[in-house]
Image (cartoon, rainbow, N blue to C red; front, side, top):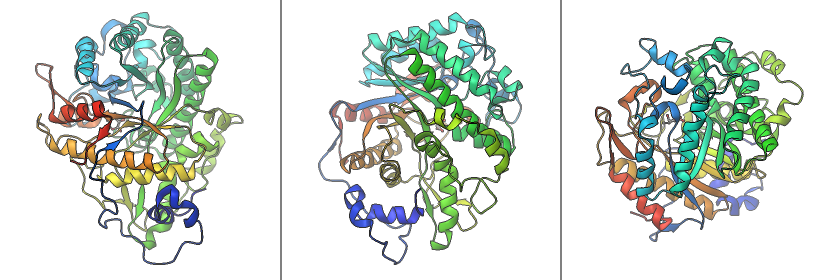
Length: 488
Ligand code: FCB
């Protein structure tokens, strides 16, 4: 079980993994490092190289790019329902046409190839495969993803395939969604259908994208689909998504599919604003990170995540524990081939357990930008979960500063550069990181922000659907070709 966050950071400041043994002597008392102190590390003057075979790519998700939400037998998802409700999406957009990728997929794959990206991460829309979330398979939906995968393979691009990126079939929500156990079982069946259809494909499979966001933003705060504000349903959604993940891993192993499987967790380094905030920040770390990492990697839930103390998830702990049946944690902690990390930034925590800003935010106000946090996160994982499988970063990025955006995007280039430097630094200090996918390939439907936040390497004119690579895409392309990131 990890110790106080601040102490873990102190260990790291004593020299990463190399300094770990030396640092395991009693921690020296002394002033707490200030979270806002000047960076303790500067990049070397020479380019930082990545290991041979490092996998570079860019990511999207089905609902955010595909559009065509009623085409070829697709059923409704919770995001169709949510976006149709007035006031839920900043600009009233609905995810259709989004970036029209369902129709433009071939030229989008050409674009990926032209940029020289060896890998592409996308998600499968469950309601295209099973329009009602269970039972009947919609062959037209299966065929779409078969064409997409074959299109990638013909172009020599490696597929990273997410099974669930938030577009739950609406009938499953009507039956309780992730707050009920049945959804985990349905997810396992859906996963088996997709594995069966693409069994021969050597893919990087991901079961569930960011179970934390679905549980907390979708079920606790209600600002994402399904728009529920109920902390106990949020806690239940944590367990049932993780159980669904376990069921999918089991289906993958049973089917003997090619490639490897993991889960995509959004993790966030948590920094106490001062020593008085240490206890609350440890609890926030439990809620934000260990509530997901511990069950998946260790087969246990942390005992400090749920409760009434500052920083905890204030759900009914007994009710949560009653959901966990015999065998669930074994299923959830079945060995993985990779652990996918999504990193956007950090948070400060005060003594009341509130998450507070300690670094500047991007146009996405939840994103406190701190590249060194990525290094801290990767090193924390190395220390706290030494038996974890190899890591892959499956999302990292920043929105354009304005809703109109621009193809001239120096902020994104510098963001990516700084984060890649920290990734290379962590690899040098012993972290097994095998790949990196920028978020996102294309400007797209950014959930409750609609089309007003542009996260793409490639600009999309939403009137004409014209694609134009931004300056950052050209820069990223040169990093990928060199397999190294230059200091400036
Ligand atoms: C992540 C989501 C992704 C995108 C980025 C900006 O949390 O997984 O779909 O919205 O944030």
